[in-house]
View 1 (cartoon, chains in turn blue, cyan):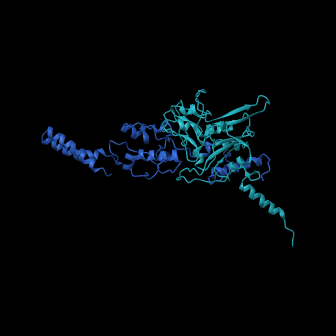
View 2 (cartoon, helix red, strand yellow):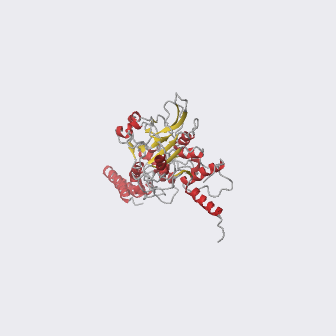
View 3 (cartoon, helix red, strand yellow):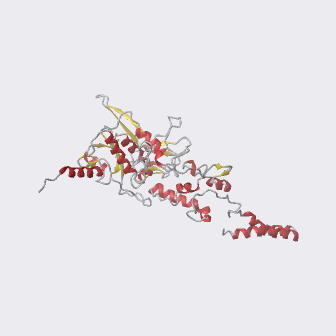
Amino acid sequence: MSDSPNKSFTGKAAGFGQLLSRGWAVLLAATFLAVALPAAAYDEGGAKAGHAKHIDAKGDKCVRDEAYMRRNHMDLLKHQRDDTMRKGIRTTQYSLKNCIGCHANEKTNSVIGSTDGKDNFCQGCHNKMAVKLDCFECHSSKPKAASGDAMHPIVAPAAQPGDKDKQSGLSGKMRWQMQAKLDSVNKGEVVK
Amino acid sequence: MSKVDNSRRNFIGAGAVATAGLVIAPGVTLFDMANAKPAGEAASSAKRWGMLIDSSKCTPGCNDCVTACGKENGVASTGHPQTDPQWIRKIELKELKSGRSHSLPMMCQHCAEPPCVDVCPTGASFKRADGIVLVDRHICIGCRYCMMACPYKARSFVHEEHHDQNPDVPRGKGCVEACTLCVHRVDNDQQPACVEACAAGNKDAMLFGDLNDPNSEISKRIATYATTQVRADLALNTGVRYQGI
């Protein structure tokens, strides 16, 4: 972690305050604090005590480094939101769906709420920082179900035991064409 | 020279036609071919998405499109039928004199000159470059002017909290919403859920496509058959057109 300015600030603040009010013995204690506090303030994962530790992430690393994301994720999301909503640009790098897909808790499959007494990814940090989290009043806090077909049971043909590739290589339109053709063949219509 | 066996050639010819899409009239096929937009590319005004609904093929009592829309977009009953959002509804029409009845689905008509966009005080109601009329919920303040302005009663206000939305279709209390033409699917080169369901039910009453492309299936059909815009007198130039009403 590259948070050395904060470390030294913590130490000095404690040092000055105590120095003015007490004598050398306290200064010694303050010096001890200056050395001991930073060590205590950072846990084994490198997260500062003021920050919620982030626990949930399926991928190796985030789309930007952690310090940047802590401060700027909202700007990235807002920019992407307007691009997607207004222009239909659906790149995934900075999309909320992408964030959720990676950061959802493995047990509860959500970025809000809590798992085993610990707040999940988004909620954990926002609670700690006392920042209201609006996104999930409309957006789903869970990644899309792994089987996309579950969303369209009407058009998805029933899976056969021998099915190999579950239509994965086909675009929706091609699948639709094939289904429609299949249906008309089933009805006994002549397919020209 | 030996005699040519035509059966093989006929078979190949039939195969080619089947591959190109089902033909229902000269020059009119049942499907548009895929024309995907890359994810990073903005929607362009070169396209104008529209829909053609053939009410003569629309079966009275069939609700497949409404069900599929609800399933895709998470529009479900909250137990308050008077205020439940409604993205698409079936309408049964009857001519009193002749007794002829038919039905059709009615939803946002995706006007080229949308009144809902005109009246929106915040800019939340907007038309995308490719003609899809949407509500930006991040900006919508829920004033419901657009609901008043829409001649098709296409928009609904969300009165209840929602949970477990389709991640592609965020919805929540306090905003106005309407048919998005399944914009998340269209951007992914898929048909709207209602169109897909109609075809899957062998009705084929709904056709989706690019009105700006003269070679698209929908343009050809509009050029071939008489089609109607509902309330054409308002000159809104709707993207959803009807046949047989």
